[in-house]
Image 1 (cartoon, helix red, strand yellow):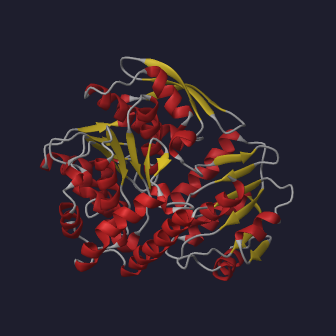
Image 2 (cartoon, rainbow, N blue to C red; image 1 turned 90 degrees about the horizontal axis):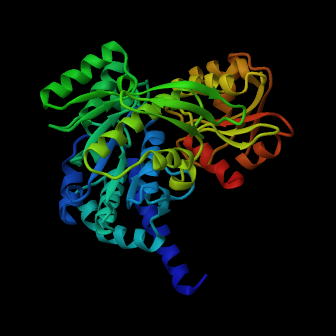
Image 3 (cartoon, helix red, strand yellow; image 1 turned 90 degrees about the vertical axis):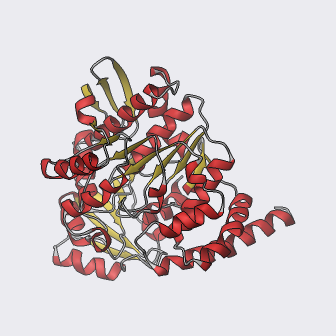
Length: 432
């Protein structure tokens, strides 16, 4: 590494430490600071064409599939996601290539002084950084994932081509409310005037909320399940899914590396979005749709969506971090690998999650529960998780000082790593 490179890495570390320190400020409702910061650097949110995605689960998968298809179609495609697994740079990518350390330093230095003067939060600053980067690089289109909620999420200053709400579950209750109806109301905040919004999965009582929000701003609601269905579905033991996607005017075969029924539901949203972009004039054909779906990991850096790291013995890396997602994990394992009944589970979760419910769901497939200590302060301690697991009468519970020790102890067991993006991030450094 050259002296100049070392200097950039050092500057990046100092600036990111300054940025991450703002996480302690928590969440502040309102879009005023984000708008002020964006206007300070020329309002890049008005200069980018975008697809805006919210949802409790599935938004990262939907965003990545859409971005992968657009990339395969030869479009310069920005992708903004969170959280990162290993490196902050993962959050801001163009055609699968992460923003460089030097660019992070340049944008952070441009933004931070003014951002701090108006008391911006971590996510407000990183969002404007992403928008400015995409505008400066003249992206053809950007796929933007909300951080949390929708109505007051920093990304909601966008004026998108279309919006997507993937699914509603119980998560971030301290900020979004403790019922699905309250959470749906917050997610519905991304529905914009005269802009189509795709709805993924929605129960009848939530559909009313979305319809009301759409009616108030004259937005068209499009239900992905009305637009697409799948036939000839095959859930393969290698955790790939093959199926025929069927719409009202076409059908085509797909191979998805994102396994499970929930990912087929996510694909309905992705394919519906792609159809709407084609209607808007984007040149996307069936071949690039297929390649985009199959190459989603390679094209976007997506990681840990029940990802097969090794087939024999089976090793799955997963980012499920709430009860709904853990339930889908179990259903998916049963679909793709019904012969496997018990697993070693390496589990870690953030302290604000419904850990007891997650453990209850996992218990029937758990042979051994491994609880490593995670590096992030927000993580629940292995000791507290162990206490909950003991109360639920897990048969074998082991605590570890770090993820390396837990991974080194799995032997030849079929193993699942799940519970948190942060656990998946630490593990991905060992595995990928």
